[in-house]
Every structure is written in C-alpha cells, then in structure tokens.
Length: 202
Ligand code: AMP
Image: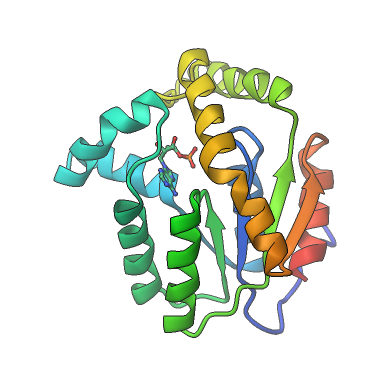
C-alpha cells in the first residue's frame, strides 16, 4: 500500500467501533503496519488467555463461545494493564470499549495516563453481509490449515450481533456527543477503507 505510510508527527489514539466482521482487526493491523500504532484488542487478549489455559481463560471461554460479552471488570483490567506497560506512538483500541461502562472507564484511564483520544471510528456494515463475511473467514482459515475461531459459526454470530446492537451500538451516540465520532463506509474493498482510515489518522 504505497503512499499510505505516513510518519506521524505526534501520537494518535483511536477507537475502532463496529459489529463483528466489520474488519476492525484487519484495519487495525494495517494501521499498525502503516503508522506504527499499537493495537490493543481485548478479543485477542481473551483468546490468548483461553489458549494459555489460565484461570482467566477458563473463566471467559464459555461466555465467548456463547457469543456474549465478558464482564466489564475483566476487559477494563486487561486494558489498564496494557496501558500501564506500553510505550507507543499511539493506540488503536480494537473491540474495546463495547459497553457504556467500558467507555466511561476508558475515559478515566485515558485521563489517568494523560492520553488524548483523537477519534472513535465507526466501521459501518450491513448486518446481512456480516454473516457471509464471518463464515467466509472461517472457511478460509480451515482451508489454510489454521485454527477456526470457536465463535465464528452462524449460531454464535447471531448472539454476537445481538450483543453488538444492544450493548455496543449506543457508543456511537456517546462518542458523537463527545465530538470525536468518524463514520466510515466499511462495505467496500479493504484497501479503500484502509486509505480512509489512514487519512483520518494522519
Ligand atoms: P472480538 O475478537 O473482538 O470479536 O471478541 C471476541 C469475543 O471476546 C467477544 O464476542 C466477547 O465474548 C469477548 N470480548 C472481546 N472484547 C470484549 C469487550 N470489550 N467486552 C466484553 N467482551 C469482549
């Protein structure tokens, strides 16, 4: 992606908001690559805990497999720990916050660590294509001999979408009220969306 790599003159901190399958992870990885930001994905942290068989991992495994949200305290604790130990050009919060309580807690943490939130970027995608995208992701992983996420199946996806609409979608109005919301059409090609995000971050 030539031309998209920009040297940031100051730190940039963004939240990626959007339903499962909107491309948050993919776009976060591109922002890491192109702008040197640090991706903080609570989903990845929880999957790591699960894979390690830690006590936390065992506690969250079933909730994740049902497609429900783990408790606010757990994810807020994970983010707090990362922010305490990280030194980066900026952060991409990927999949966090997912509830209003998490958003309030993040606001307090950012104040505590003297970090300015530049934008909450909403990736907008129709529910109809999300199911297709996620099932496709699972098929691709399987074909490549990679492990398939335990929650990438149609049944769990319905629950994940419900959780998104009930608990996470209200964050769009929350960040709009704070004057930091940016909405991006995330139905198109990965590269096109990445360019829009790069422009916001730069
Ligand atoms: P993700 O990889 O972001 O799709 O997250 C996978 C699963 O991890 C979600 O369906 C939830 O069960 C859990 N999870 C990830 N992030 C959060 C969060 N911020 N709050 C609650 N649960 C979360």
